[in-house]
Length: 513
Image (tube, rainbow, N blue to C red; front, side, top):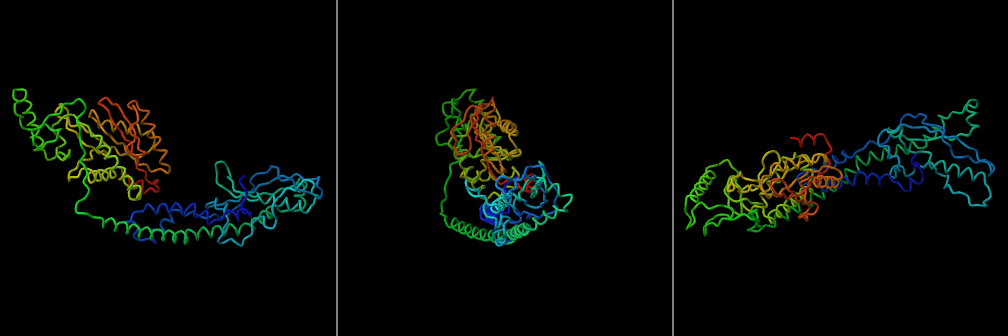
């Protein structure tokens, strides 16, 4: 059995108001801190909705029945120090509905004047050796000792519902007399129940008042304060405007090691990765003319194709289909990209309720828009989305006779368990055809302890045969792994977007749409 309840100790050390605030109000306060300004239009209604999310039903007592017998009870003192009568303990279970654990706390606002079950009995203190025997004091100590465990909470079965327990200790003589003296044990239990019934009713009343009044009032004050603070921050940010804004570098591609780089004409508006259309002076011959005609045909295909996405490479607009040498995303660009994703993820973490119901495709769209707005410094889409959730940047590889290759890929997945990691990596690697590639595997984690997900995902990736080693992380908490695939080297960053655990069926349905 658990420790006894309804005692003086509970009244002095376990106030119900403290428990209600810690268990329900503090999590709601943290939730308020994550709500974006757009959702703070009606603080009163929002406060009541939050309180209802956490509301529990107060405990209510119902029927009772014998639970078990045969346990040794506390030996009962007699009129002499040398004699104590053995007893047998008989437990009675009282059915309780609602939040049974609240019975462990004392109703300090509505039950301050109620008496605990050990009221007037004092403490149980073992007499010091040599103390003269006092029969009345021995009986008081015995009753004080019984009161410490007279009411407890335990499971009716294992597993099973919680119940409130009390007990009766009977000597062998009392057991023999039950058939002749008309003693009613049920009435004795009911009499004990009448002592704690006002305490239970006060616990229920204080719990209802907390969710009806105290919690919504407190949350409304917090919501109003947060709205004023966010409005002030927005006004401050909007006032910090200059004619010329911050200019970011465009994502840069660099040639793979050991690959020759063509020299464009002096002054030509070409990227080092692009082969010029015109013939440099001093070069001629059938081989060169054949290559020149192939280059011209490819450029014509680019110019006439209106359905192929534009990609910005160091300020030069090229298409998904373009001429050039094998390339990879520059290290500096990959670093900028990951740090930008970190800033975006931090913003999501500050306002998680706006994202928790979104499907991974919509979150990918928002990430692509953020990268294009923050990184390229031009009104072109560098980061595009194809298929279901992947973001990518293509490199120019027609010069090698291959199709355009993706030098960066980001796959966005909602976490459902460690068993999914292998399939997610296979899907991501299936998109990669460059010989040296940067990649991001982004997991949307809606779990109560996301750090466990982080550890499990990284461990599963390190078990893969493609895994070689870890690099020093560019962003703290996001592992950067080196993989070796049949097509080449892949630098894979494992990114986590931690959102609150999905609570309702409506959220589950919404994120699938």
